[in-house]
Length: 413
RNA sequence: GUGACCGUAGCUCAGGUGGUUAGAGCGCCAGGUUGUGGCCCUGGAGGUCGGGGGUUCAAGUCCCCUCGGUCACCCCA
Image (cartoon, rainbow, N blue to C red; front, side):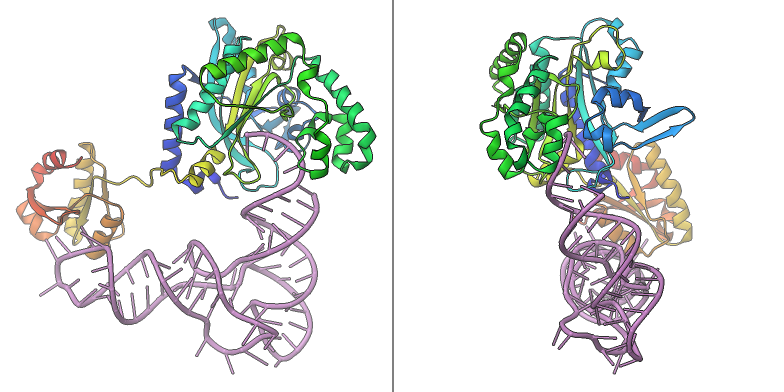
């Protein structure tokens, strides 16, 4: 099995993570790390039994009398951790973020992998519209930090716990006369989960959607007021969004605000990230009292795809400060020790480990983009000094072994 | 789970209708420069043609099975 994380290179990966952490820190989020294995029950209850993720995409196994899953997402685990470790007792709103692997047993394709990585935030303990707006703002800030601005932010409200059943009933009433025109999957969904028909890609079904009832018309007054406030706050921040009356999310725990960030550069899996408010999740996973919360989740691999498409340059393999070239067995022995001495002094030092020719060592130094080489052979051992070669200019300076660290300190940038 | 396409050197790929020693570019190694990289020239190493079975005088090429990959459906990060 290949790894998408591997494909982009560790240096690029670390750079992207560092940028992420920097943005998240500016919004005053702190990192949480939760286990990869979670009880199946938590995930199933949190995300919803009827969702695709739970019903067919989980890597799950049983050991003893416990059922485990490799986490397919990280919101439910974070909520579990919040409750289990009594984070509410810390007082105030908990602003948490995560970066880590997730697992879904799907057919892999572009932007969709069995093991993938999500980053995201959870703002737990506030039902204020500003929590929603800040969640969206930090998500947008992340992509802006990478220079990704050709994105579309879509926004909708799902209403409260009662709104959805009302809307569901209305949708069923609307589609029932067209039952014969629907695809087979849409027909079963009409009975089980009609909201899922809304994001169909089937052309015929999409034309039917044009006259379908809008969720917003079935949403309770309080949720509508909340939605208006979120939109106002986003406008205040100058964040551009489009309202999408058919935006529903695939996880059951969402209520009120729902949003998705799309990129044209990702292929069929066009969502960079998405999220929303999930005031109902805490009770679903065992809390006695409801804990209002809002968050988003994004795909690291999709971020990389977008960066690639927008030709954002990421750091490659790091270069050493100096490459030590050795000629002959005695020199090799001395140089091996010299490497240690220079490393102790804080320099990044590379050297040949295969006993190769000088030419090969020089070529290797060049390939590794070492700015300096130090060439050591029998003569140098006699004199206890060696030429330090500037690989860009080709100039060489004789430096006593004892002065090498000072010389490098003054010349390595 | 369904469908389409693809698996040939380390990498990217070429190899009409089966035909004898399977090629290129890049990379790698060496020499040209008896202790100096990048550019150039010359040479070299490196291949169970994804795997198994079959058809045939003969299979990288045709057939069957199988494994893997890519993309799409679906779903979502």
